[in-house]
Length: 424
Image 1 (cartoon, rainbow, N blue to C red):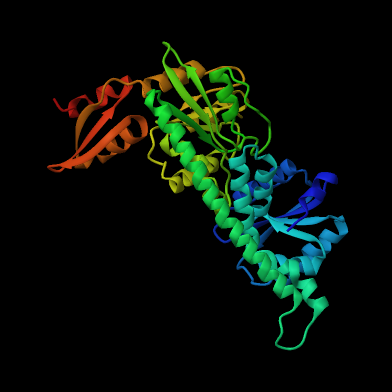
Image 2 (image 1 turned 120 degrees about the vertical axis):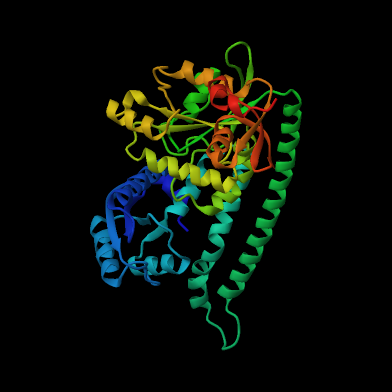
């Protein structure tokens, strides 16, 4: 793996390689490649050149064909770059083959994201989670670190060389460390649950701010709570969850939590490692899903965030969709299109304050709806059940004589829609 301390001492020059596989539109592949450049910049890498490679089928040796590998190698040498970064997962053997072939540092999007998380983790829990993800990622790549030692030491036929022996020792130590980290994180999880139980006793409703990285989540938290949470125009500026108590209209308290931003092709190991932190999204009474209305890839960002929420089991949480940065949107037509595609969404600008009062009113209405009612909804109107899950506070669900029985607290704006289905 790359010596990331050296990156801090001297910025590395990088060649970024994107992959357009069958079925992937060129626009999406280019968008992902642009996002990779943003990730590289966040870590201090200087992008010298970006290249998009059309890939008909993956090859075991270099991922791409030998001719394309030679072309990229020549390009990298001519540009005098220090490293090549692939915008897709490359296997440990492919990484070793590339580094032997080019004599350069070669890594992929997953390693880049892991290192960004490592550089920005602040709390002990976040640092443990990042270390766990790094160790799980590096374990299958250990062979490369000991190949030179094995070649140098040699040994009699049938005997293990020094490199192989050291490799086994390192693997054993890493596996022990992984298990220890998992145990420590379980303890932290227990402490978090204890704090949450104490918090729940005061019966203050909670909302979690989620969304794509750099969409303005921390800025929204600051705007709503008058807090001073760290904000930066960079990917993954916030890793550790920040919770603030705030009164939103009528003196009604709400616990607001800012969570880590999501990104396309997030390494699965990071999702697993950060589940304890992201549990705030699962257990919150309401999700505030923030998107950047000025980003041309906002639809892909929405899909990426929803994919992670599904993995976390939070896709059916009651939620509010808020499109931020409307002051920077390309045109009114863009906002109109988003409004038609996402009915009921809110359009705001944290920078100017536009739309924030309406958003605050909706948050209060959702979290402080009237006492729960029971609604009997026919089987052929399951869309109404799904809407309750999204936009109301569902306390229980059941089934009786071909109808769904849903106990929920619903905001005023939905009352007319569900009045005919209310029991009693």
